[in-house]
Every structure is written in structure tokens, then in C-alpha cells.
Image 1 (cartoon, rainbow over the protein chains, first blue to last red):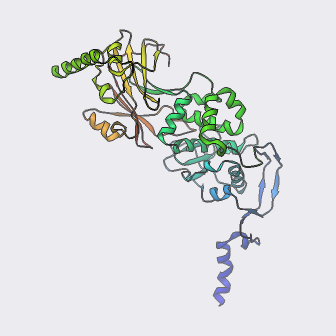
Image 2: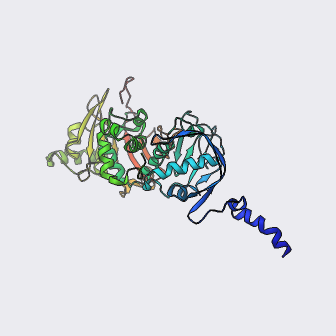
Length: 251
Length: 168
């Protein structure tokens, strides 16, 4: 009995840190630890002031459920850019990610995503994020005040979404948006996109990048996509319909 | 070797005389009948049918072929300035025999392939596509390792030269 009294507080601390620090969240909520939050702008334009956030209970959400087991430490296995080094997740950053994911269409939050990794600086700074085969990497610059984190995540998740399409759908996208394969006289095979009409310049690099840019614009700047690349706008509208939109009240 | 060449020429001439339709279904087998360095544009059109489009490049030109059913690109045939076929590109469908890397490498079992990563790999999005290149035999296989899918197979003449100002 004496031992039980001794170990019970320790067991509680391990099982539920929030409870151990005096905050027990009811069912359907989770504990957000105290942290300092830097000021930032939400994707709908709302300014969020810098503040010290006290520990509190927050309603469980789709973003939380998706992200909670996917925050990974270290560098992803086989990550090719050896000069990029690992950073550490902060409570503030995790909350920002969860908030951003909550805004995005559910179908982008696919089980194929195996982890969010936090690296310090991209080799192509100020690039805010990268992706590879189920892995999404967020760099320091993703959390800067001028960065729309939800948009950054939408773009990276769009890369995964392209990977998840079946081959016929991928071919359909490429045909609809003017991509074809060519053979150089020296035997090099390469993809060639339409001559112009890209919402972002780097869309010319590959159809995957073009797809991610266009899906991102469909969500965040549909007027531009409709004007610059109507073929992509029509393709996304036909393919995803009402599924490809923000959650209610968000933009 | 002579027998093979004679057979190919016979088949080509048979195709020329017997096939007049502007559109024909294309296949990898038909592509292999074409003789790199010798087959002319007319002979290609007689075997494969009318192309979907023709793209002029600096020093060469390409006829593109699409799939009858889906309209997706299926093949591209290059011609040099002498209007002789200088190479071709075949894009297999997902479940075709040529979409499996083991089948394709078995077909070119005598080749010595060098692995070249996709040039579009960048820090932002790391892909798992490579090209398997045999510069001695004039073969390139573009392969998506992640999906285990052959994206394209190319055969080309080793005598090809790219003009210095070749426009992509």
C-alpha cells in the first residue's frame, strides 16, 4: 500500500501529463500545454497576436486526430539532402499544424502520409516545405509571419494526392493540361508541359509540381487558376467537385 | 542478320501496300518492326497510321501517336533531317507486358544499363524516377521505382546528334 501511494503519482504523470500538471480534459478534448505563441496571420486573413498561451483543453478535431501520431523527430530515413538537419517541434508549431489541417479538405489527409518532419533550413532556402513518398517536411521558414501554413500544407498534400491517383487519372490530368513525353536525339526522355499558362513558374519543371500548384490555387486563388490555367481548373472541378473546398467558415 | 532485315523490309512493304486507313491501332510489336536509321515517314504512317500531331524541332521532327480509346499519348517517332526515322518512344499502359521492368530488362538482356536519376528531382519534391540508359545499344527506359512501373521505352540511333541550339 505504501508503494502504491508512492508510485501512483508517477504513473499518472506518465499516463496523462495534463492531469499530472493539474489539467484533466473531458472526453472529446485534448490538452494544449502552455507555450509562447508568435503572431501570425490565418489563411482567412485573421491576425493572431503574439501571446503566452496558458495550458487549456481544446476540442478534438480532424486535424488533431490526423497529426497527433505523425509528428516525427529527426531526419526522415533515406532523405537525400544530407546538409539539412533536424529541428525540434514546439507546442506552438504543432498547434499551428493542427489548425491548418483543420481547414483543408478531408480527402487530402490520406493515410499514405506517414509523418511530418521538422528540419531547420531547406537547401533551397526560403523553401518552406518538401515532400517525398509519404513524408512532409516543414522548415523554420514555414512558420514565419508571412507564410500561410495551411496553403503550404495544401501544396505538399497535393503532391501526395497526385501520387495516390490511379495511372489513368494521372494520364488524364497530363493530357488535359498539355503534358506530353518527348525523346531527344541523344536518347534522353523528358516530359514537356504546355508552353505557358502556369500559375507558378516552377510548374514547368514537372507535371507533379504543376498539379500541386494548381490544386493549391484551386483552394486559395481559384480566380487566378481559372484565368491562367482554365484546363486545370476544369479538371479539378470535374474530378473532385464539392470535395475540393475549405471547411465551412474558412478560406 | 540478313534474314531479320529482309523480314522487316518485307513486312514494311506489305504494310505499305495493304494498309491504307489513316488510323490504325498501334502496338509495341509494330514499333519494333520499324527500322531505326532506314524507315521513312511514309513507311511509319503506313504501319502506324496518321499521327495525332507533328512537332518540328531544330534539326529533327516528331510524329506523336495517341491511344485510340483514351486519347492518351502512346508513342512518338523521331525523324532526322534526312527524313529517316532516328528513334522512337513507346509509352506502355499500366497492365501491358512492357510496363513491368523485369519484362523490359529481359527483352534487352544483353544491355548494360546505367542508372540516371530524374532531373526534375529537387529539394522540394523528391521523386523516385530514374532512367536506365544503355548508350552503346541506344536504349533508354524511364522507370518509376515508387510505382514499379515503366513509364516509357525508347530506342534511338547512335548516330544522332543534337544541334547546339536544340529547342525543347
